[in-house]
Length: 248
Image (cartoon, rainbow, N blue to C red):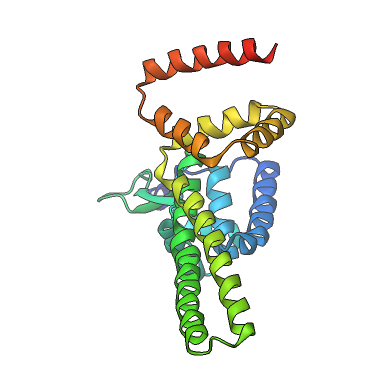
């Protein structure tokens, strides 16, 4: 009977060497401290980092014992991490000697680009969209006040600033909103390719675009977006050849 009890308590999860576990815990603590800057509660960030470094499904008990959390704190952190799209619930790895269905366990989303897209989408909903609502409401309010008081130069200046700032926030919000709409592999490739382009090349391209009329740039982008992959390859090769010839 004693042997059976010991077997029941033996889990598939093994934290490994004490040295590796100590490093994982230090990283989890540092990740938690940075979480606030990302808009994520420290407990959620700690849980996420620990599960990422363990690279295996863990039960709530294993997580709270490793991180020194209470049952309530661990449960809330895991639930919130799941809501953020950082971790997912899976079947608990079966323990030796235990009968009945497996319980619940949690594991970090293994695809970093996948959870990054989810975090961006969640932050947009929690932070970006409410900011836009506030600014749009403020824009309507100051426009009405300015119309009722056309001689108030302070109101006119405020209306112009709010309108300009609202355009900026809308552009930023749209750019952020495109990230979660991309497939993880598309986002990864786009950023990887950007990372391979030298900074000087990117800066030269930005300055080049700055010297072109908006209509010309938009027409080119619109035309490219309708091409098939095969036609796009032919067009880019042709364009590269033309650019090299013109540049000589």
